[in-house]
Length: 405
Image 1 (tube, rainbow, N blue to C red):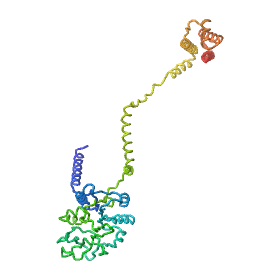
Image 2: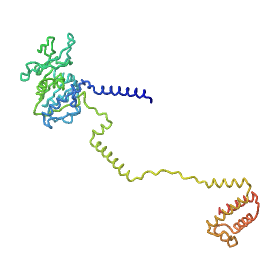
Image 3: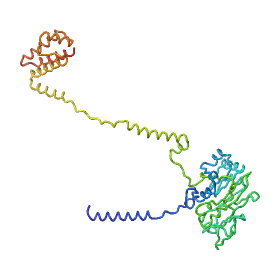
């Protein structure tokens, strides 16, 4: 690489490093997602509210419910307390709404902070809600909030310093419903007076229990509670929760709730399947550990050297046949045959008389006539020179016939 290319590469890397530094040093943008989740410290999380309620209660008086209300009440219908919901929107279906109302009627409290809670509960309580729109003033100013109870009412209303979308109760049965709070938007003269109050916070007795509805869940978020002294509004709104009963904090109806996407989620939900899975993993680890120590490492296969004896023999035989030296081939064959007799039958081959022929015939399972004919032919071939190809072939046939017996 030339010096010019090195300088160019260095400048390019420096620029890239500078851009990475600038990108990493920038602050993350504010997350305005309305999660209402207990773990979220973003403006629209409920970290502050969750910890405030939890710290004011004993461990047994604050329980988190991550299941749908219908399932929880079906399994724990005998438990008494305050079921606390807060989220952007909570749309109970009819069956779930009736289950909640039945539970409240037996002396419990239902506290909901949401812009919409479904029609069944509203119809049962003779309530109606409506979204507030001010077409004459597009640049709507922050809302002003006030509590109605004399002990909780503040001289100047609370200000929610955000332009938020709000709902209010447009139908209220004042004979059965207690109005707890109202709001209005700041007018053009920046007056801190609520001129046209809109009810958003009510309480109603239902059976032996109580239902508290708040249509502005934003007041339960981190942003509102940490803004100036607005936390006093939230504290006052929470005073309608009975102190002598436990709180059931809902984690199910939350925009920012944690969702299990793992395929093992269903496995871990069952205690027995979970421990069976753990035992399987432990067993596999132990098996690998101990079995791996016992097993010897695989021995590599070494291919043996090929046996070239037959090829060598064929080569030598081809040389003799090419020269037509039948006598030499016959002598080699006779020598191999004598070596065969010495090794197979443990006999000396120097003396090939009648005694040798009788013992060889008995050991080789051949007749004396066949053995004598072979020995006589070997003797004649050994003494004759040259020999023909036919005589060599006859010698080979006699020897092979002798061996096959």
